[in-house]
Each structure stands twice: as structure tokens, then as C-alpha cells.
Amino acid sequence: MANKIPRVAVREQDAQVRATNFEEVCYGYNQQEAQTEASRCLNCKNPRCVAACPVNINIPAFINHVVEGDFKSASDVISEDSSLPSICGRVCPQETQCEGSCILGIKGEPVAIGKLERFVGDWSLENDAKSVAKAEANGHKVAVVGSGPSGLACASDLAKMGYEVTVFEALHKLGGVLVYGIPEFRLPKEKIVAREIDTLRKLGVKFETDVVVGRTITIDALMDEEGFDAVFIGSGAGLPRFMGIEGENLNGVVSANEFLTRANLMRAYDQEYDTPIYVGKRVVVVGGGNVAMDAVRTAKRLGADATIVYRRSEAELPARREEVHHAKEEGIEFKMLTNPTSVLGNDKGWVTGLNCVEMELGEPDESGRRSPIEKAGSDFTLECDVVIMALGTSPNPLLKHTTKGLETSRRGCIVADEWGATSRKGVFAGGDAVTGAATVILAMGAGRKAAKAIDEYVKSK
Image (cartoon, rainbow, N blue to C red; front, side):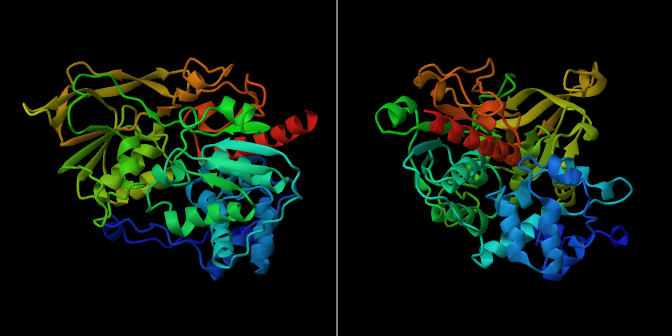
């Protein structure tokens, strides 16, 4: 029986070797490995994995094509619902979504759906086999603000419907968080991200970089003067949060957002680039999410001894299990149940250490996680040269202040209904700009839903 076949392990770089380079950690499946793993699928009559996928890919169908060796058909199935399979296969939290719902996971290991999606996506890119079918031009224009996952997903679906789509990106490179936030060793930029975006170009999507919507041009101007029938805001959440503790203004305290942007988008890790980045000998990253893991593993690769400080226990770490596992293999130190109280510095204004206090877990808070409580008299100091704050992000308030009638929440997120419609007629939004920092696949799901809503809106005008 198929469920008796053990899950096919994915080949990876040796931990000690990869901790010194920025090459991709996982090699992915080859054809034989992919077909063997795909054969484990039970082809459930009511596949729970599909319902658990935010973009509802027909997972059993594409996997069945992989078993048969028909990778073009597998690609076509995925393309119906996802425009970024090589990306999603690498960075989506499959363990809590599709794979987390796989029936094989009840008593064993689920089908490696993410790795199979990656295989199909990469095969499609290498063989130039991605489906780019689209409808005839309908004469309507839609603007997309931001080239991150929600914007790309929305643009892709709209282009397939026949819309003339223009994506406006504030930075000089396309991809949003895919290029500035996720390290090269998890998501190769030229090999994967740039090529996925090229697929959208083949659909007719236009891209304009170095355009800060709200400064270079406003949303009101796009609609009232430039003739766009609707606008989708997928500008993400790039405004970093800090703790508000003493010493946060010292040299050597940075947000994970800035640190990763320098390392990823501006290639500070590459000696051929002049982008400055400082890690010293010892780096402490405060936080326990995926961004914290990306930052601490990047600091390790840049030559520092790197430590994670998190105020809850390992069981409460919000980061993907795979990323935590990889970080430990690479020699990252984890200090759980630890919370910073102040940053120490020398008379020249540079970081010298981080004062911390030990924590213990109390009753669950509103998120369902047990609340951390300080242990009296447990203060101690971690010596370090750099402190990276990875405490989450919120949307930039620029669009709120430059768009008439655009409602935002107390947290600064754009208020939108489940289909992305905002308080401003003709303006839709999705992804992190609406929810706050979340996952790539959830942002894509929001972009796709908004594309449907935009189509209905334009047709009803």
C-alpha cells in the first residue's frame, strides 16, 4: 500500500558547510525521488489538503500527474490556482496547512506536498513550461501597489482575465518581501523569484520600479487622472517594531527588517557589493518567528556567534519547525524563557551587551499561548556587539495619509472585507497591509480573492 512507503528525505547541504555560505540549504527532489514521494498519496475522495491550502490548489490531481511523470500537466494544474509554485514550495508553512491536514500524518508522516510543488515549479521554470493562457484584452486597467506575493497573485489573475495590469514597486527590485526579507539560502532571487516574475511579464503584466505610491503618485491620481478602473494595495507591512527599552538607540541595535534588507536586497553578504553591514563577533536576535530565524542564520553566515532570545518556551516558538531545526544544526544558540530589559553600551555609543531576565509561563493569553512572567532576581547580561529586533512589523502609514476615504485600524492596517474591498470605492487591499505580518501563501490567497472582487466591481460599473 502507498501509505507503507516511507517519506522520501530531502537532500540538504551539510550543516557546518552551509553555515558559512548563502547557497540554498535544501536541494529538493530529483525526478525519481519526486515520483516515489508522490506515490505515497492516497488520492482521498475528500482531500483535506485542498481545503487547508489558502489558494485551494488541486493537490491530489497535480501529485497524480507527478506519479505518471507528466510534469507539464502537473504544472498546469498548479497554475490554475498559484502563480508562484517554486516560491511557495520553499517558504510556505506546509506543516500547518496542506501537509498538516494530510491523512497520512495522523499515524505517520504526511506526503511532502511542499517539496513536490517545488519540484514541479522548478521543472516548469527549467523547461519554460508554465501555462500563460489569458483572455482577450477587455479594455480595462488595474493598478497594483507592491510587487510582493499578494500583488503578484492579484496581478496574475487579473491579467489572465484580460485586464491591463501595472504593478508599482517602491524599491528598485521586484518581489517585495520575497527579495528583501527572505534570505538567499532559503529562496534564491535570480534563479527563482526573478524567473517567476518573468512568467507574469509573459501574461502582459507591466512593472514600474522606484515608484512610491503616496509620494511619487497617489492612489487618487491613479484613478482620477491615469484612468485606472481599480487599485489593489499589496504594499505589505514593512514598518518595524521595537521594545521601547533603554539603550535601543545605541549603535548596533537594528531591526530585522533593515538587517535583512541590507543582506538580501542590497547583497551586503557579497564582497563585490559595497553595502555596509556590521555583525561584530556576537549577535543577539530578539524574537522567535521566521524573520528572527532568517536574521540569526544570516548573522551566523556573516561570521558572528549568533543567539536567539525568546520570552516563551521552544514549544511556543512561532517559527516553522524546519527553520528551527536548521538553525540548531547550524550552531545557533537558543535562550528560551528570556526577555531583554535594556541594552548596554560603551562611552562611544556602541552596544556591549543585553540585560535580560528569566521568564516562566503563566496562564494562556488571548492568543492561546501561556503568558510569560518575570522571575524575581533572575537578571543577567549577555555580551554582544549587535542586537537585532525581530518583533514583527506593521504597514507603512503613508497610504492612509495620502488616500481619500481609506479607513485603517488602530494597528495601522487597512480595513478591508473578506474580498479585499476597502472604504474607498474602487480600492481593494490584501496581504500584510490588511492583516499585519503573515505568510506568503496567505497573502497570495488574499490577492486572488481581491482579483475576483475587482473583476466583479469593474463589470458592474
